[in-house]
Amino acid sequence: MEPRATQASVKEKMKEDGIEFILAQFVDIHGSAKVKQVPVECFDDIVEDGAGFAGAAVWGVGQGPHNHDLMARADVDTYQQLPWKENVALFSSNLYVDGEPHPYCPRGNLLRITKLFADEGYVLNGGFEPEHFLVVRDGNGGIKIWDPAGIDTLSKPCYDFKGMCQAMDYLQDVIRCGNRMGMGIYQSDHEDANGQYEINFGWTNALKASDRLTVFRMMTSQIAAKYGCFATYMAKPFADKTGSAAHLHFHVADAASGKNLFPLESGAKDPKGLGLSKIALHYIGGLLKHICALTAVASPTVNCYRRIQSGECVFSCTSGYTWTPAFASYGDNNRTQLLRCPNCNRFEDRSISAAVNPYLLTAVHIAAGLDGIKNEIDPGDPFMGINLYEMPYEERRSRGCELLPQNLFEAVTALEADEVVKAALGPIADEFIRLKKGEWGEFMRNQVTPWEIKRYLTML
Image (cartoon, rainbow, N blue to C red; front, side, top):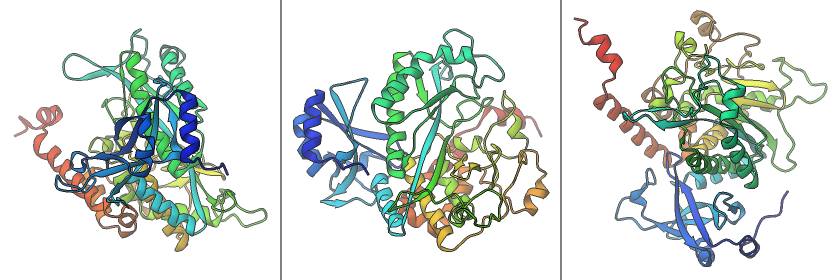
């Protein structure tokens, strides 16, 4: 285990690195980064007391204009020099009010849940794979893909050499900067849609993985601007192209030794044929039991549900597939699964939207999985070697393969009824439900799409 940083050691490191300014950073309920910039001379203040914020100006922190200040206290272990702005340091921070941890802080809440998990003897390790589009404004109030050479036009552009080369300098900047910040980036590629790219991170614990994804989004927003475009983590910015995910590869490890607990012990029976331990299977059982409530957190916007539509929509993208699960399943190395098991060492959760708040997601993930472990929830039989996109509805139903919520309201309703998942969010749950019901209501009241006009205007 790496030694923890100290306030004094970080102060000395910043002096060596030529740091002049500090960003005290936290996220709101949506996962959007919020910061204050302070001179480096104020470092002790933001560690011991925090940088002050008016809570009513921030989404989902449970405050009005009459409440005492939110104080974002820098976590000294998260020191990072910004490679694109080398006189600036970034610290992930936790929110306090009147000297007490603020229960509406997404990062602070995840710390609470990881401690509960550690008390049971476990730690969740993993890494996100953030997909995103590079886009530009089209001059008519819309967007189009960033394609300066006019070559990113293939109907199956995934891994395309020319498409990759066009973005190579951007991707190299991202990898270079990300790895200077300790992200452990080991791969990048042109993804399945025109203008879409994916980055693969190294593994770490749930808290650091969530910090990593947050900082990665901040970083790509700045690097993309250098190339005259912007990086969007909107789940489905183009109706005819694949959506963007933040797939989470994960396993549960022993909190004391760090040993991966997912592989089956040598000589043990393998009832599911995947080489997985009982802990692995029960964790997956918990995820599947709570999947509808989890979906509200994994896909937290109206737009996210354009990714996970059932039926023939899975074949509607230009390349032929959405690569997105619409059904609650687990199984072998098969990308039509929600929970894919490439090998006995890990799973991949393919349902998670690029628009996710990673702190909230990993908190509810742990809670659902722990419920599975404690109650020895059987996930049922795995789907082996089956294309779930093509499986008949009645066969899926007979095997208990649940359809994911098909819109934000359905998902939030499921969350509202799930005490395990709600408890993992603490008071954030009620605030999240209130805001998301409002978002759905605003969409339904105020938006009429061109499709509706075309379909219904003269139908009667």
